[in-house]
Image (cartoon, rainbow over all chains, first blue to last red; front, side):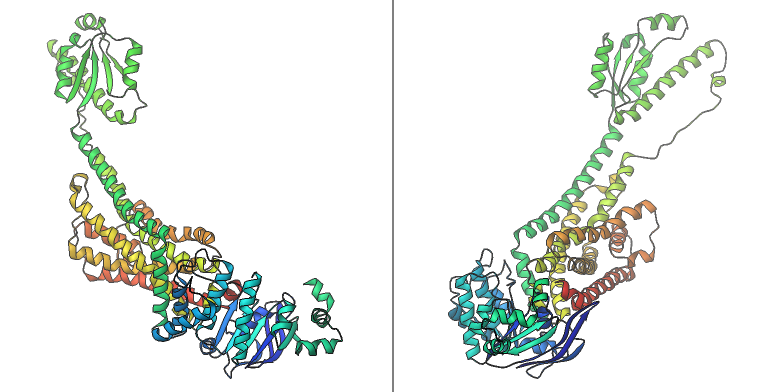
Length: 244
Length: 394
């Protein structure tokens, strides 16, 4: 469970976050919706302890990432649209590298990699170097890396950006099974379809503030608009939507 | 396993699989000793030439002045006798630069000589041919001597002491040999030994920082449960390791080349024993550490490999400057020099090559200075990686 209360963050003249608060529960996928520049990436970076908040409180399963960033990161799977593969390493070496950074021992690494190969159908690329991998193969490797240390929490920053239909479906399948296993997933996204299909809870942030939190249906009901996209626009305020 | 070792192993694996970087490494390892060999070899060749080589000239109408021919023969000058040549032919001949000059003794010489009127002798030369200038000076002096000799014997025949014509006697001592002049250049080459430490680590230092940013994998890496210092240290030692291997191999190759060449002939020496050579290799390790640390601290600020290459110019400048500037300043070896990285290694090697017994202090200072500099650079890099500003820029 990830709890965020009244978090603020300022970069010089810019107030990036100005009182964000929400709770992301275990066994749920929570969407982080907001226009570009609303502070989604800043928020995710605070959650993983790369940035320090100015005020408010954050708890990832009871641990404050500002105090114990390494402990928090051990329990987080972090995935962005940049898969960051190393061209001269094979998939197996790549996975082992990150597993070792998580402090896993050799036996555990071997068995988890075997599991991942089965789960994501990596057989054909597991011992190939990443140079020349297709986008679909890249997301599979990145997903395997995110899952390998079996974190309870997942922070995903627009993971489906630039993916084709098949890769997007593979991603969604994995996310569904993670949710079923009781993981706590926070996903920043712009794709409304993804939100309605995958997410149990939606947090709308704009201008660094939480504007609304609730299930997709609840948000639609609250605004009195049937389409989630229109509901989102009315929650954010059209003016800012256009400006952004 | 220690996370520092995890990072180190991964960076080394990647570096050793980078064919382009390995080729560069191999090139620099062999290129530098090859250049050194060529420089010293050329210098040796030149010094052997200018000391022993006889001057070759052409004399036209030599039979008209047998005394002159005899004197020319005594001064290690080979005169090729020719019959009359036209001006164009002489010009053509000099253009080939085989002969330092052409002396033409015209027909009227004998008549004038006998009548004790100034007898004409023509000296043809090409002042655009730089290598011939010194020989020409020798030839002119020879002709002046010939002239003075005749004058003196004529005065003697008239009962006047020849000493009247010689109010002063100038004796010239030129101690410069072409060898000592070019030995300076070989000395600079020796100084550039250590600049290569910066080349060996460069590719890995750039690839593991700027390259990581270019591939967008750095943010991901920073989001792993690993401390900034562990990340920097792993990348640092990986780059430094390549530098250590490269520099050591290069030093060993250069050692055997210099050991085997007759350096005494050009006023240089290389009297380094094997234990001393190993000591030099050991004290160069901190330099490699410093080189890699500096490059990491610089390259991590670049967004791409290309940008990093531009920044590396600074990193290269640091080792290049001391070997070039210090010989120009003509400084005496002083203790402070041993505390300045690169300069210290250069000074140490030069002093050891001369066969000096230095004691432990210069070695300790050389190693210590570079270690302090390396730690500073690593500190800056770690602080930078930890800073929010850097996280935002990644």
